Length: 409
Image (cartoon, rainbow, N blue to C red; front, side):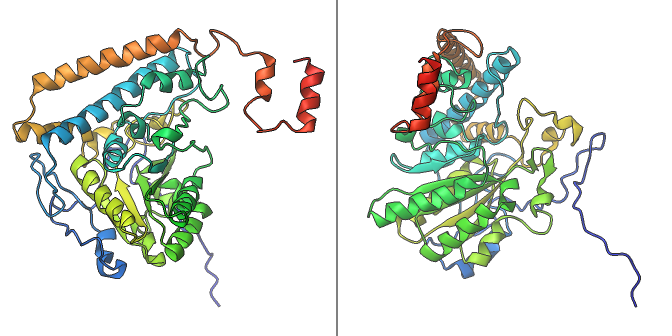
């Protein structure tokens, strides 16, 4: 009889506070070494792409390999502009939160390439179902950032009337579905929306976004079942930034295997991509989007990146990971990598780069000042009590009509 006590395996991160950063668990192939299949490729014939890592830019900033689709300088400079604007916007909103102008803010520092590059591939009318770290989906469309700041400040010009958390934008006309705080719902919503688009005979596709932690939610698997069965036109993005608040990606199963290969159980084609390589993100997104538009069904993509900032302004990452972890991330910084690529092409230089930074800082500062004219958290016009009854139901139900009457509003 075996009398040995049973035990559980509890995944542990490679490092903790006080340790030296260690990313040896990530195997990084040479740029350009991963093959690019035809969009009609059977999922069974491309299983290796869920275990590899698609990279285009090498260490010197050169674009190499079959995933290099030779983007124009104009497209690349626009991508650099979008990422820089997103980061500068984040920095301004972080400062605003520290000044008490909003209650909480979430940055996407280090992850800018993923949202900005995919948005460049999508078309008007396509619908994104994002989490709270995809502000680049709006900024890359040149969406008015003053409107974003008004929503963050919950002021008199907040189109949501203060009914949603700061940075939970909702912009239907810009293909940005209302953000949900219940993470994982985005995949089910994206698949359902894509199914509806196909049923109507429309031409629009959907793009869903979740983090590595949300892959452990049942919605992730339910969405893959529907995607596998009905093959709707949807791109399913898993942003593996290594940390779900203070739980590292191994708690969601990332140590047992990567997240892209989960598509194999549903016969959904899957890619694993360097999320800090703008060129790779653009090319992989274009491949998946073209597949969806060609009625070839869904694609699951794992974007390998790193959450360089805190989870939110309520979080202190030094409590659970080395303080200088982000500086040692082996895939580098997406902005610096694209800048290096453009300089290597002779299409950019430090002077133009610094001028762009100055111009964007001025633009973001001006938008913030304009938004502040309409109030910030706790300062400015206060909505009347009657406002709480508006914009909730199309027709106010009897019990709320009674409450409004009792309140005298």
